[in-house]
Length: 160
Image (cartoon, rainbow, N blue to C red; front, side, top):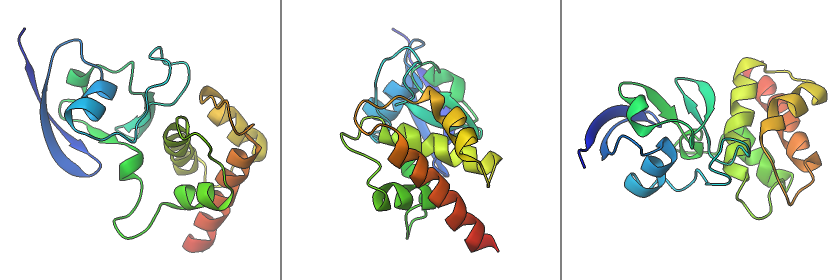
């Protein structure tokens, strides 16, 4: 089986890896690059657990082929924090206890960051709509939505 050499940027750092033509970005992140924050849920793009940012756009890592990230920028849950502190979304998830088993949490955090990058002052309805592609079987969503709205408020205060 021939291998494809991929050069990309992951979480702000240059990265390169080998993959087969059928490997997904999720597989490359977890199995090849040992970035295990991104979780596998359904493998069909329906649950949001594997959400990452590809050139700033929210995508399911299970539906993107690893070879497609050649020359592009990928951001995972590991890459949304500063080196010295958690991203406000990550901190708000902790403060609101908006996580339980942890399978969906990284995808929700990445999706929430994408939301707040696009709309720094979302309403509750907008947050619920934006995050509708992420499924959670444990928390019931209310704590997650509160965490996202708290993070938005904290981010607005920090830039004011």
